[in-house]
Amino acid sequence: MTTMLWRQMLAGLRLLLVMTVITGILYPLAVWGVARLPGLRERAEGSVVTQHGAAVGSELIGVDLVAGDPAGDPYFHTRPSASADTPLGPGDPATSGGSNDGGDNPDLLAAVEQRRAAIANREGVAPDQVPADAVTASASGVDPHISPAYAALQVPRVARNNGLPEQQVRAILDQHAQGRDAGFLGEPTVNVLRLNLAIADAARR
Image (cartoon, rainbow, N blue to C red; front, side):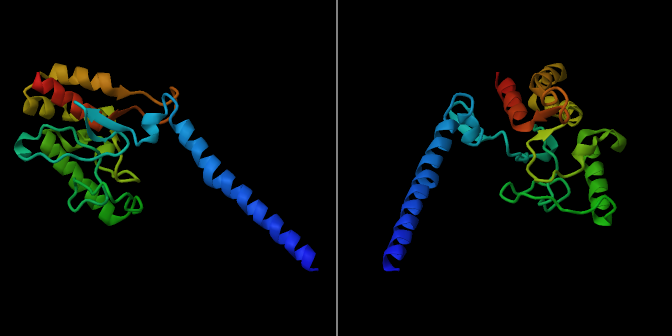
């Protein structure tokens, strides 16, 4: 009986040791090694975007920049965030999540109309010209992309406040537009961080 018990204990300890080595050492090392392969390292490190040698953000996390002077706002803006205190934000990038309000929720409908009016006023267009993604918060609240239509709506203001010709800003937008994944999945998008960085570079020249 005692011998059998010791054998079972030793077998259990051996299994514990083997599984600890496999799952606690070998597997993490394998994952770490794969993440260092060419083409995967940047994604594994959070897809950090650098400019002039300094980290300026992640292309996976949308942060809505706030202009010091709203009358001279030079930035392309992300989608609104459910975590924002005001209709257009900015939201808190550390707080990810949507409102979970249904499409017929009166508070959500009121927020959408407030956003539509605010964006129409900011861009100097009629409310019916504001795209849907401009007035609806993403599920995460930190969507780094907007539709090309929403980006195009912002071009005249961004060009004017950066001292750039509209044609040049539209060309930069076209360069940064991304098609559907695999040619048919999702919708065309534009990464707002990369777009703003490209505009800032052009304005400095």
